[in-house]
Length: 326
Ligand code: ACO
Image 1 (cartoon, rainbow, N blue to C red):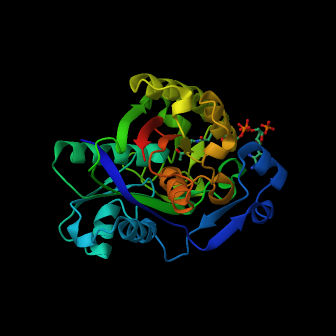
Image 2 (image 1 turned 120 degrees about the vertical axis):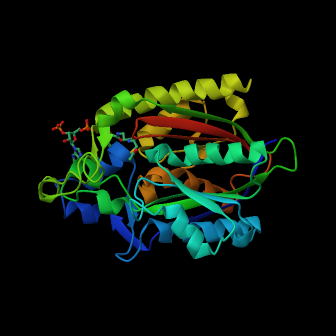
């Protein structure tokens, strides 16, 4: 049995932070940011908005698209590396906000690959028949964990949320065809927020050194991302007995336009078949894939019958893909 994506939704905070705004904050330029990353602007959550608020808005729009009532949901999974609290879970807060009283709820953390991981977990619950209506959300308020004096990271990230509703497929072919997950913990230090967990609680020294914010060895992560995503494309095609031309759309993680283009080249896909939002959203970590997917579905680019490859790479290091027969 396949899991069918019955509806998609997303939410972006109103405030826009442009490259020009950042030029006034750190030693950078619009030319550097656009040529190295493809990013022109990103969204920043309002002071009173946390991940559960963005997640709730994205969830409402996905439920509406799917024609499913919150009260009928069996499970809510929220992928996030920027939860409202250490505990309770952000998914639990979304459950409360939606009044999804029947639903179990938990968070899942796999950094930028979080949505692919959460979609895979949801897919298993559908396949086993345990649950029939699952909300998979990815939501990030990364701006709270960024050092806006560090030009290496502050130009990259933005806030947002995306969601999908999973149900059992009524048509044998449509739905999630295969999922592929990886992690290499030996490279965990390459992309990390060192303080704020049980190893290094946030204290005065941590704050002074801004150790509670994202630290990244960007150029090393870049090389590994291109290599691992290329291997992943080979695996997805081989496992499913497909050729490059069988893939109609690529919905990649939106970290860097150069990484996206490298994966598109590997798939021999023209850029009009690649969903790109990094220019307007920046890197919204786990939320980037469902945000891009929702935009592509709502604008009518992705349609029933399209073979869609979702992929992501991020902290962990983690990487993964899901192939969906839309
Ligand atoms: N403005 C101007 N110069 C800058 C900026 C900036 N904002 N940031 C860095 N530089 C400088 C560096 O200091 C360096 O200068 P130097 O040569 O004098 O030392 C130079 O630019 C080149 O730096 P690199 O890091 O080598 O630049 P690169 O071309 O690799 O681009 C980037 C950096 C955009 C971070 C890229 O490496 C990247 O996208 N990496 C992958 C990110 C990613 O995919 N992360 C995973 C997901 S995130 C998650 O999981 C939370």
